[in-house]
Amino acid sequence: EWQERGAATVRRQETDAASSQAATRTLKKGVKDFHFGRTLGEGSYSTVLAAQDRQSLKEYAIKVLDKRHIIKENKVKYVNIERDTLNRLGDHPGVVRLYYTFQDERSLYFVLDLASGGELLGVLKSLGSFNIECTRFYGAQILDSISYMHSRGVIHRDLKPENVLLDKEMHVKITDFGTAKMLPDPAKAPGPLDTNRPGNPMEGADSNRAPSFVGTAEYVSPELLRDKNACKASDLWAFGCIIYQLLAGRPPFKAANEYLTFQKILALDYTFPDGFPELARDLVERLLVLEPANRLPTEYVQSHPFFEGVSWGKSLWRQKVPRLQ
Ligand code: ADE
Image 1 (tube, rainbow, N blue to C red):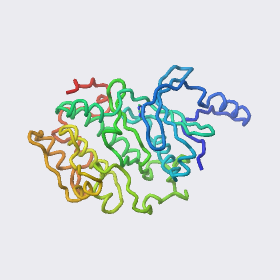
Image 2 (image 1 turned 135 degrees about the vertical axis):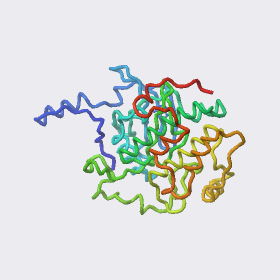
Image 3 (image 1 turned 90 degrees about the vertical axis):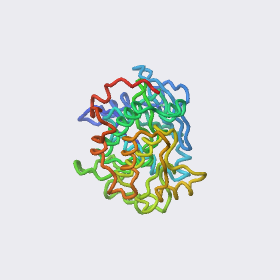
Image 4 (image 1 turned 60 degrees about the vertical axis):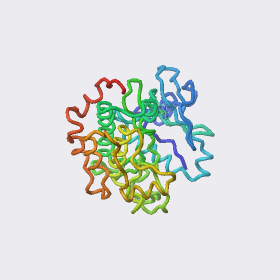
């Protein structure tokens, strides 16, 4: 059952219940507070629309999910995961931020950062492939975002160039947390917003789930195929696939169908095209490692020679984008 309780619900601190209700009524955003514009994207359970806050004139992307369809198709859990993970993230330039959630009779609404530059996949397709400088820059922004998500106990599990959006400055905004996994946060007691908190009837459903495959065939890690178990290192596998794809113009594991793609992944059956840059090759080879424990950890990826000269952290997000080529 969907409950309206997003962290984005703005409430004043009130002592008396009646005025608290009044404050909620005036501060809680709803459909009427936005002017809806063009369609930005369509998924099986949702449509993303450009929208503008009528008061502040700030532009957003609003994800509209059809309640009946979600309930009928048993996707309530994934919608909750998406909202919970976005609420846990939300303070990093490289992750799409969730501002408000609300609903009407028919739909759920997620008010998100607008990423007007579209998908990284689109830019990549129009250029064919990226040069080393662009790959280093976008690779660094993606890695910095992964590092932040992991520090907040979130494994994305479906990283791919379609889920890497670009804002108006052409900076990275990671999206689509519907299949993410939330790890218990050791730094903080489980909050009321966590669907995966202990005691929740849905807890553990992840690991007990029937072998339904999460993610996208080309970027799925061997451990997910073998043990149906994803870990932080699974995102680094996907990251290795993305680095390869940015430079080569195609993902490393690609076959006529999903089954054959999975076979290639499990056999680590891929090759580098002629002329693939040497440092990038070394990095990819240390990421596309079958055993997740032997994959290069994030900190070592950051200090790998391929990323030499990159200043990590805040300054990475103040940088001007290299000329795309
Ligand atoms: N498509 C899906 N999510 C989007 C977003 N946040 N901004 C722009 N386009 C999108």
